[in-house]
Amino acid sequence: MVEILDVEPGSIAAELGLAKGDKIISINGQPLRDYIDYQYETAENYFTLEVKKVNGEYWQLEVEREPGEELGIIFDGIIFDRLKLCRNNCLFCFVKQQPSGMRDSLLLKDDDYRFSFLQGSFITLTNLSEEEFARITALRLSPLNISVHTTDLDLRVRMMKNPEAGRIMEQLRRLAGAGIRFNTQVVLCPGFNDQDKLDRTIEDLISFYPSIISLGIVPVGLTKYRDGLDKLRGYDREGAREVLKQIKSWQEKVRGLYGENFIYCSDEFYLLAGEELPLYEEYNGFPQIENGIGLTRLLWYEFEKLKPSLPPRVGEKSIAIVTGVLGAEVFKPIKKRLDLIEGLNLEIIPVENSFFGESVTVTGLLTGSDIIKGLAEKEELPDQIIIPGITLNEEGKFLDDLTLRDLEERFPEKEFFLCSDIGDVLEVIVNGKTGCGNCWPAECR
Image (cartoon, rainbow, N blue to C red; front, side):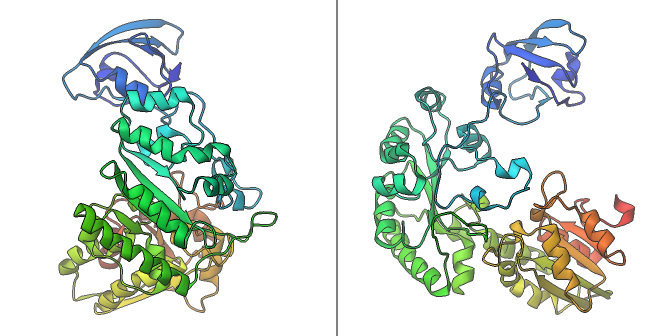
């Protein structure tokens, strides 16, 4: 049985008398394993709903709705049975590189195809049962997002430490044959799956066109918590430039073969190498934006659209934007334009990641403690401080479980704002508040 978290007011579910705490036993006689089953069983205009009410009563409901009309039931998550956990022991696994004492959700290694289909997370295919594979093809769960890393089968087994990893080409052929399309990624580890190994991987993967939608190349992420783990090194400026040179060659080849490019490097490679990012249109709709590929270009693009609305002057104000080390590079061209606004004193504060280690430079992995430390090291802080929304989860917590309130208590004379995009940043600069309600001054709590 699946418990209902809430019901949309005025929805069909509300009209039927369903409420928070009721439990769905089945739809059309079928128990629900996940949100996919829910979508599938409620796809028709007529279906049967069996429910156990909070008071213990059992209801059998005949549901009729207009085409496309939502039922209005809200669940707590998308997996109703047991989460599919990862049995790999990848030498580059980020979960294993975290300190003890982290909350359980950060230490959970999932490899669930439902998350891949419904939410865009990447899976390895190594943990799929035959029944699950058959379900993917039967229901045409497409597209999927697949972590390939290498198509050298022996190397993939060694890198993932799972004998099932050697079936990747067979599995991709099966998916393609069933009409399933897929985005793919390679976590690039110097000395393992790079250089000629990467050439082979790309050559193998592009042969799946048009089943393959995209191939993203991202650098391995390394923290300081690697005692007892495999020896790995990250990328420096020269190494990043070599990767970009290699990928550029393949991008040109793919354009020649198929008339379009679908190979992309993460922003981190470009920023580390100090090279120009691809143009907005070269990202072809940003198929791997959540993988850190194209975020910078999209930010700049959104800023360009908002530039005409910027005022020539504002009242005297001092504002700081907190970022990771790489984020400071991202904001350089934006700051250059904002500095032309009379009355505005804008500062970008890059915060080093002491929690995970200085080699972790992305903004999204900043902790509350590191932000406090970075701000405390400043001799003089601006009056208003912008915190990127990407640093907090849905519960409003940083990775170390601190909250914005902890920042307020440490710096009670400062005003903090949580900004989810560049539009919010500009709202704070111009109007002293965000446009989405995520501001954090006392009157907005």
